[in-house]
Image 1 (tube, rainbow, N blue to C red):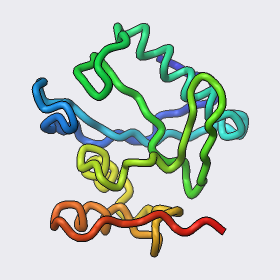
Image 2 (image 1 turned 135 degrees about the horizontal axis):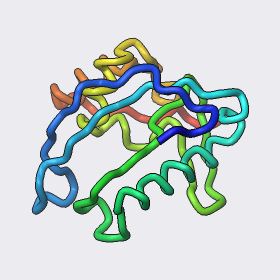
Image 3 (image 1 turned 120 degrees about the horizontal axis):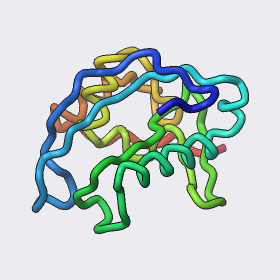
Image 4 (image 1 turned 120 degrees about the vertical axis):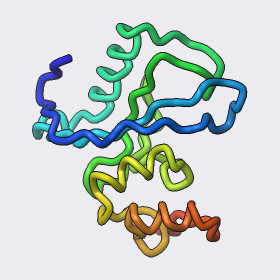
Length: 148
């Protein structure tokens, strides 16, 4: 699929991971892609997410059990160091993704592409590599920065 203002730069390896949250389902396949976005796309990230939802529908995704089996799931995980929390509209958007730091199926492929990327809203701005190490070691949970 070609989206205006979106260029694929890199793709991680494909990882098979055990389902989280709803365990009675097959393993998931996960990957992270790095995209180059035009300035117009950077100004309308909700529009990009909306385009992702159209792609999901075209590939056969239907509403089902939350966090249950699905044909495809496309998400925006992070856009540079931007921090967003848009609660209005058809597709609310929080960047970085609110739960990315507790999901190995996000952190493993993300670390393959950008291990030094730092999380702008967690205490200490940990890198993806640090978040993955903490998650794998069972270290204490990280917290969002206090709002000012």
